[in-house]
Image (tube, rainbow over all chains, first blue to last red; front, side, top):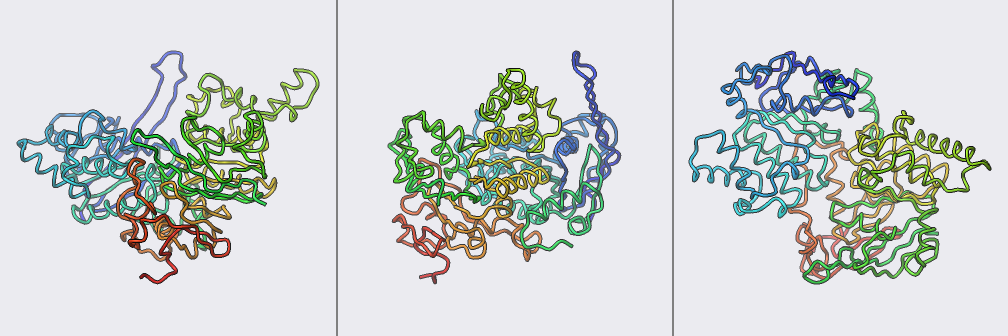
Length: 268
Length: 331
């Protein structure tokens, strides 16, 4: 397997000193090093305020990092300096699904136009070609062609999640980053989404990086786990290794808390 | 003896195209000293039941029930004062969305102290009473696992993270030492460590103070670890109800089985990355409820008879509403 993405020494510093009448709040993320292989699923776990969402945003380039570099397909992308040319190629290969998929959609325009936007801005396809691509993608995520004309409020939670997924795979990315994609979903819809993502991964060879609190799902679909605390990766490794032999204190705590909920399962 | 006893609770909502039954003959009992889980996906009417018990439904919705009683007294025929008294002292509710349920214009400390009943406060002079009230507030806050009480008691709801707000709601519910705690999705959005902490607190309260808990959630992992009995709802109908142990071991309704299967944690033999078994389709919206058994269009075992609403059937204390339950051979 080849590396799709390499992250070296990614750092982000957040300091609030500039705001007046407010105490300085200092949060430092990183340095983060990680590699992502083709078709691999990586789960990021950790407590609240550990910098998980921030890392996800940095990876997709929604926020500019202060230091470090990201290599996508062996193409250097310095996270710090943004030139339009590198950005262009980058946005094709990595996409993000946001935490609340319903709120991340524009309520004023139909699904078709929501899905049209990334194509219109990033490709040179004509309108008829774009519509064809959108219809194919809608079918791929298990929706109907008619959903092109639907508005956000006409769709159920599961369908909205599918549209969010469709939007993110629109440009045929290599890496998909998701911030708690399953948290807001009901159990039956959640397993549908899990199945869908697994299917898409097989078809498109997507690498999938996701944040989750649900360790049951993490254990089911992740190849590797990254544990974060206070902006640093404290442990990472294969899923089974982490679940069976957690090394770091925090990992132990998380795994123990999970195991204590799981019935009839002996601790090893 | 059941403390809270609900039989055939029906709630009709006017959607503009005629009345729709948002809750259709729901049965639910909570015995003293038990933890009853109320499971259902969103839109199944879990929160509506909570509002119906607490009397927080809008007046234009039509609520009918054969029985809706608290310790043998009907909640529906009570006067507003009596009902308020029951809600104040005996039943406590943790609402779903903590940030919006709290008063934005008062500090958390003020809101918590307001909830302390007068007879718990010792001291004859106002400064003594004030001190003692504060002491109760601090100890309750510690009990639910909030460490920096000084900071959080003087904070406003919007300044506080959601999970602390959630814990705070639980503290506010517990401060009046209720007999029954209704917790509407108390562990939503919490990380696993905090969740276990809250669940342990509930279990401890249940054991030491014999507090009954109606635990409303769709987090099956949390439910399975602590509750004694479970009631499953689907689209406003009770689907199955019985002891947790029995339901987990042998669910009789196809929906219960699908729900249990959807949590990968329950299944130790599941190979990683395999497709999870699911029900096709989505939860029906309120305007387009199927007739008869509402699971009908999604059910793998559905037959023609399913357009008639199934009656409650019973095997010992395990009740289910299904024409073709899983222990029957497929026709």
